[in-house]
Image (cartoon, rainbow, N blue to C red; front, side, top):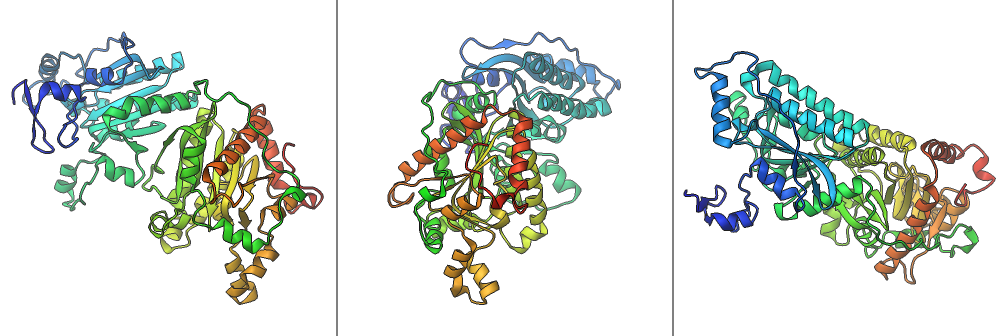
Length: 556
């Protein structure tokens, strides 16, 4: 095509080049993404007049004296002449929605964006600049892998860049990786997957071995959409797929939360709404509480998150092959406080419930929850968990994937997390599947919620030998909020509006928001050592005799 017109490889439409440029390289016909140069990526991300290139001069080397008929040195000269770039990456300081960052953006035009010694050095220096200046690092990838002409020296860049990312992890600095099309080989298998947040643009292809390599080496038939951003999102390898038009705003939101930047929103103190004395909690039959806790009109966890949080950004995946829909999580702001949130997700309709596995997580769900909690520890953010589940998924696949192991590991992780933790049982809290995300400094329950070792129906079937005895089992198990507060299992009860949360979701969310904010405010002054000591003491007392003497009753 001419410079005035471009051909979309996705839909074959002919697009006016100036219109394409105004649309950030996105086809106006099909939404397909044209490749951007490194400079174009920097300009897309940068706020006005904030882009400053890093002063780094790293000469490319020819460590092997390589030639495949054409000397490698000549190929480097040709790439420089064609792109007007010294190497395949450009590094800069800039601001994304008022968040100062360091960015390393790759350019596929320069020898396929391959990872050479110079490219690895530039990316490492960008990371070291971020470390020295206490700034987030954003990487933009477009690469076919390690540059073969540099042999094992190119290969070593995978380890070098991974170490640079690890140093940023140790310093608690935010890292975000933007995957563009294509990203393969040694780049995919090193720093591109090591960001705190991995964002892919629509349709981007990503993986270690490319489709052609797989087809030629083992002749395996590939599934539709294999290695695309959407395919990888479903399988838990990326956090979100983001169109270019939304990228600056959404990336800026994540950077702001991760860097704990104050937005000066909602400065009003939290209202004290939590009930801490059992005799102030309205009495109700425990079986009635079970039925109300399961009411399909109650807000789901994702609805609560969107009602109580500002700037909520959902994050997906466990990064090892799954994105369980029964666990939802992400980051946002509760008033002025950045938080990480995790919770069980059910639904309102039969289709919703089935899509979210009726709120019963598989191992990938608990691995996703654990990943988000570790992110909270790195960023120094409080964690809020909402519990609403009939239990962990009991299927064969879950057992084969280590359901018991992941629940045990999540319990251990929460017990040692060095940040404030607040849990609210918003509906049904059943068995270890509920407790797995409820090892918290403060555990609250909504007025019509329940918390139990087993469902009343299950208990009745086992001990009464009759599932119809479920109401009696519910009373014997003391699953209702008043009983749980008396036992000291919960620290307080969040009141619900007249008719329950299902009658007025907005009012219920406002009460929940106030309750969580008050608990976080009370925990804010505690250092990690005190948090851990009190959290361990909280759970240590159950069964020790101390739990029979007093209930927790809030701040201790």
